[in-house]
Length: 218
Image (cartoon, rainbow, N blue to C red; front, side, top):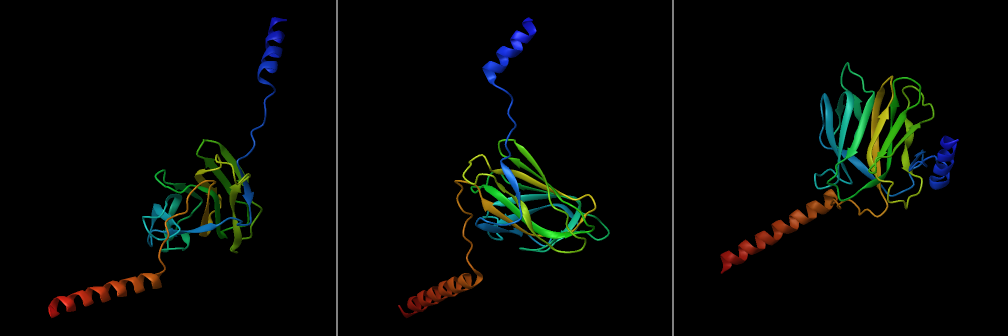
């Protein structure tokens, strides 16, 4: 009798157990302000490399990428492919903790070596883990943008610590990886367009030449 009384008291005190609501949800449509992730360099036969969000510069937020199976990558907003005679079954994307920008959305595209569904696991910075399985994609065919996004875009807890994408039969390629900012996060540093950088450089050379001419004249 005492046992049942204690259980009843506990239920009254703490209430019935509640299922935890997911912070994130599976999405097939990029709806936020997305920033492209650029591979650091053209990598060859690696299990680990870096990406930069918003521009191909170490001053931009850095993403660590580790893979199961060695990969080759292009430089920039480029493809990630299994190395020759290898396979690529798993990728983990981890924003570095020193980032001033934090991320709530993650999207990617690619191709699979056989028809099937991709597993996506997202871990939030508060430790919560959400698991998702995509619809089935065709073999050797580009699938459209797929990823995760916060259930509530204003929730400050919906911040990505890491995202893992897995497909047991192997990815043919993973590409066009995009991130968007979590609630309250500032944007990545602006990166000048190449044309702007050229104009700025020519202007600096012009000022330098003008200064030298004045010095000689005096």
